[in-house]
Length: 167
Image 1 (cartoon, rainbow, N blue to C red):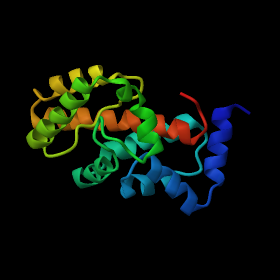
Image 2: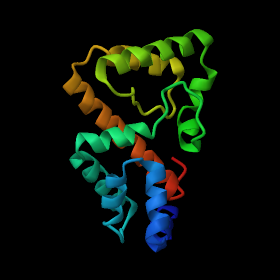
Image 3: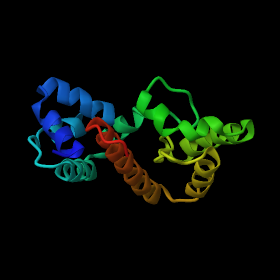
Image 4: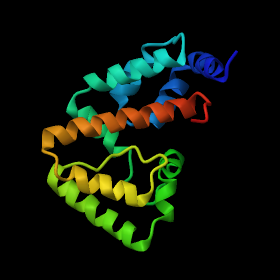
């Protein structure tokens, strides 16, 4: 049995409470966790990922806002192991880049009314700052769509880690 298959088997075998907690560690939206949980048992990791994406695509904006609340600002220190792992490259950023990220986060939140969310895994602080600067030029509807796409990427990475995969 592959690691991926073993991970899905373990996830399917969890109690509802334990599986819900594992899903909430991936995405802070209780509606997302509930609806992904309702899809068990999953035949494969791909089935789980596809369901997670489909559920996210149908979530109303208030549930997306709840999911965003579970993510620290880019560049902020966090107690979340997942967020710390995802933003590990930011810790190597210069003081100037970290200060610019903090200022960019404030400008973004003022413009769009929610946190700047980006899939930070493997990206440097400078790259995340460049993306932030570019995204500040989006209109609100476009930015909301971009943010949902980034949230889906983060959820997939976290689901892979939950299943015991390393990528």
